[in-house]
Image (tube, rainbow, N blue to C red; front, side, top):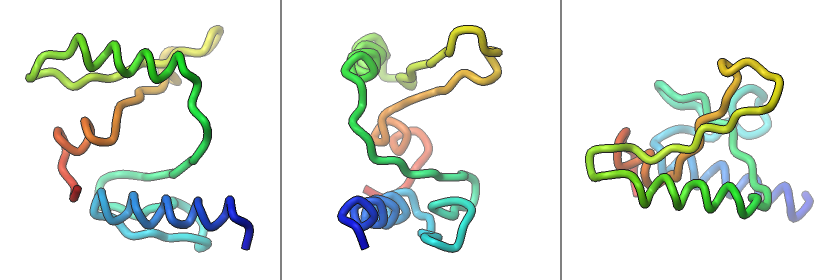
Length: 98
């Protein structure tokens, strides 16, 4: 098994434990099975501008607001926009283990 595959498997196990799901691994479908989430895990270097956007959302969020980043791809429907947030912020609002 390649180093990248081992890291991906470890990521799936970690996310499953942290969010209270079950790693499905090579069985196909979702990476992590969960009662109300469909979880795909990807490990890649993130662009710096995305980190800056997440930092900006967090700086501007008050205690009663969830910081998110909305990513829109040019010439695509806004229905296809992506919503990105930090895992710790997601957990604070929606639960899961730490």
